[in-house]
Amino acid sequence: MHGVEGYKLLTQLGYVNEAFLCASHILYGLSSSEAEQYGLPRNDFTPISFEERLIPLVDFLVEHDRPVLLRERFEHLRNRNRNNHAFFLKLNEAEQKAEALMNKLNSQFNISIEALSVSFFSKK
Image 1 (cartoon, rainbow, N blue to C red):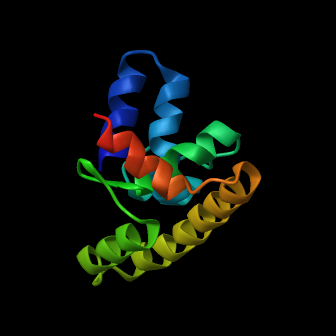
Image 2 (image 1 turned 180 degrees about the vertical axis):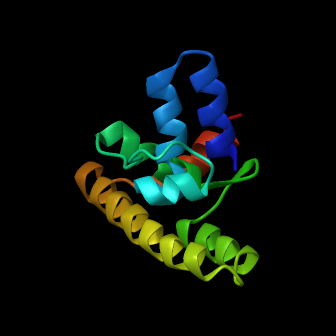
């Protein structure tokens, strides 16, 4: 629920654009009805810009405080939420979006985004 809590906090502080980023990274974006189910305003929180689409990908490449492979992260999320059918369906959509962007970046920059994530965390 860090996306929801981040949205609420940043909205209260007057950071509307940044608040949108918090909400729109939840499962790669929420429709207005989905947002309402998470306790958010009935707004469309679909990431559109490159930056808005990059944030969820980066978020999916980190679990707690360590980098993970994309498939590993989604496997863990599925295991933790296996009894929530609606979440499971949305998670499948999010995985497809994350894989598509990661593959596009990998080919465009001729680099593994997952390897880049690992190297970033190893320098900390």
